[in-house]
Image (tube, rainbow, N blue to C red; front, side):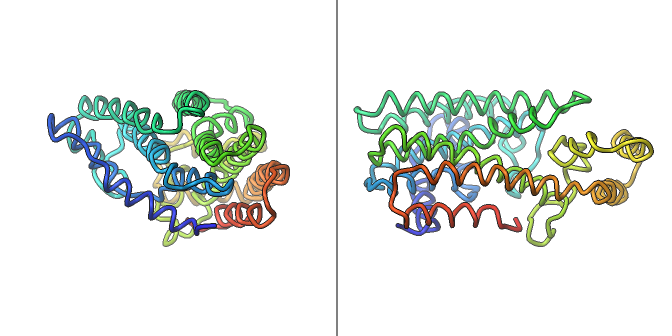
Length: 324
């Protein structure tokens, strides 16, 4: 099995080699720009990995893997508009560098380009692959819509939150793995199980992200620790705390959430103290472990050599035991 970092490097090279027309410049330059900002290229690398796991030719999977990466960056471009985000990976966002209309239209072309790349799979699996791609794309949009709705709702329960992160984040991992498996010649049942592995792992990964936002080392995390607390983002930790807090603690937590004049450092420290008193980190880690175990249960059922399963197991462990 090829090392994952080599598959990521393969994708990075393929992204750099993507060609877009020069005219009209304002339509195509933003696409090259957002793709040049880098990122881990994890989703397309997973597609290549799945193809190789079932004995497929990785070169045949490059175009569909690029489709996943172009689609992912399209969603980021539009997410940044919705969030009014000034920065993406430390660089100016497309709508700030150009304008919102340019970012909308360039994003639209990226979605179409994603389909163009995905259609380069073998005709025998084209319909299946496009069905998965469609389902994945709709899921991401549903997840983003729910995420926006949660911002204005007072009460969100844990199950709703898990469903939202499943749609917004996890289904892309599942979809990428399933498409890669089919290109590699996997039977439908094994491709489905690998997809389940990816979805459950994706949920666990997002829960880990929620934990790191509060408890991560700022040097290693690469983002402002406590950012979710400052913005009142409804993460697993906050939803669980609102569910468990009672009496004075509930009043104090709600006061932190509704205060408009509190210093950020004070707010992060105060909310974290409540989390610690309620053992919220332990609750989140238990939930994360539960989804990791569901991922491993799906993995166990896949008809693959043990060393290939071990490769996936090690990959999942590496994804979940991280500091950034």
